[in-house]
Length: 390
Image 1 (cartoon, rainbow, N blue to C red):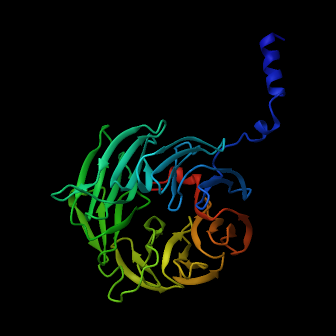
Image 2 (cartoon, rainbow, N blue to C red):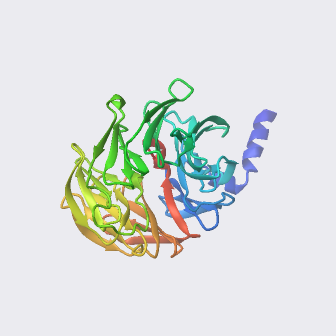
């Protein structure tokens, strides 16, 4: 036996036990935002356990996450303008930068090489190298004769190495096309007042912006952007009955099945059911409160709904065949987010004020386990790495 082989065997034999035990993939991992402590907890969705807490991520009061293509790195977008790259296998921060004064979310490009962040202050989008977090391009969201800066919302990735986002103050939708390297910007003006969030359909074809300043939504067909923005569901929104809006719905939580779109009605205790072929409303479902997330189980058979304050201790389940509520659950005070395991057998639900994340079986609705956490909010599984717009 030569000396190099002897040295190798010695090195393997003397590795710490922990190093051998932590050899693993990332397919069943996820990250939970702990907003009160500026930390995240890495979780295992198969074993239903918390693995490690990572601290030092700043203000996570409205944080979101996207993943690298290999699902090893989580990019955390903080409200304080922080962009943090976390290695979820090592359980440590790889790099952290402060890129703006107030940011609201982000996206990763189709090829996984660019990370974009949408900002309130200053308004605009900044795009970074996903490996180094070096600035690639700054896109100020300027509008009007005085070149004012608009808040940017609803930032998503789209096929063709594009990012799509909405300008809250300007009432515009922009496409930033990076397919040739430097961004090519296409602007769509007068799409409606105060777009507050946006989503892209799972097939990457349609971008939809919700409007806070008026009824209706704005729809952009990304296969045919030359046709411009179309208004749909003009009766969607707050309508004629003015009610206080305690929390704006999150449009990326809209549920889409083969036939229907299930979406929250702004300021009303309703879920709207829309024909996704012609974008016309077919039914209104009365629910417990003002919906925030309306999310479909991966097989499309169920839709799970959580609610705004003061009715935020409740989750309801809608059967998508009968279009009726089939279960009401009480996971704890201040339910903020829900996340299905990739094949939908379980759903993880965060209850901020109860200080826990509860895992439910989606067939029996039985609570399987609860994990104590520090004011948990968003839950993000690595399966998102392979889906458009998440």
